[in-house]
Image: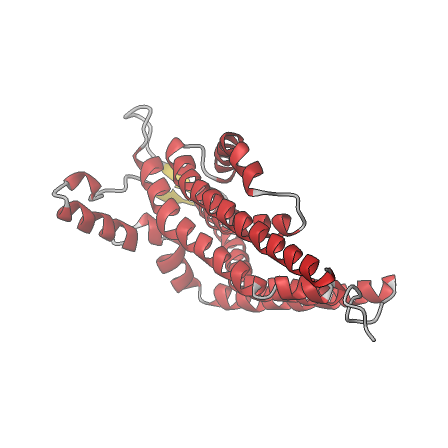
Length: 280
């Protein structure tokens, strides 16, 4: 009779684990390369529509802001000018950014598969209860990541571009951004948002092992605000608007994580009471 507290798979040696990990990594890298090559080939669409989209006045976010401005009778929300140019000041600048942007897009598209491969590697070592408790984690992680990516692309990126394009210390200075700076900023905003949106998942698993509790998170709420602002400063361009834009949803995710931690705690207590009743 198999014990419930034993892993369901037979034990593997250290070298077997390394071999298994190697193939999971190889398949993940292949997935990234496939999507990166596809993005590299579709250079016109990737750059003109996706990458340079937030730098155009007809971008979805700017059009929605104009519509909102019309509804509330405020012309301030309608952005009519983006006063900057994008240049390439290095001989290899455009080619380098072509490769970099293709690789970043490959990672974003392949992220659900990469996490699925990671889950396939660690799941055989989990107990049956742990597997049951982690059911749906691949879907949840992928959903939060893609939500963060969309938030970074459609909210943070265009507003950051608008702010930085309109920021002038003097009329003598013209904003002529290098393509390396533009693509790097856009990639940081999008990928950073996707990773930071994993906070509820992290809190869920920490709550499962008893490291995090709702009371602990409430007690350190003020400290969390400081950490969120610091993370916003590290993962966004050096302007207050971008930091605030990412701080608000992160604080909302923190509040949501408190609810998740409370749900995990109640579920665990209910399970403990059920087990105690069985032993009586």
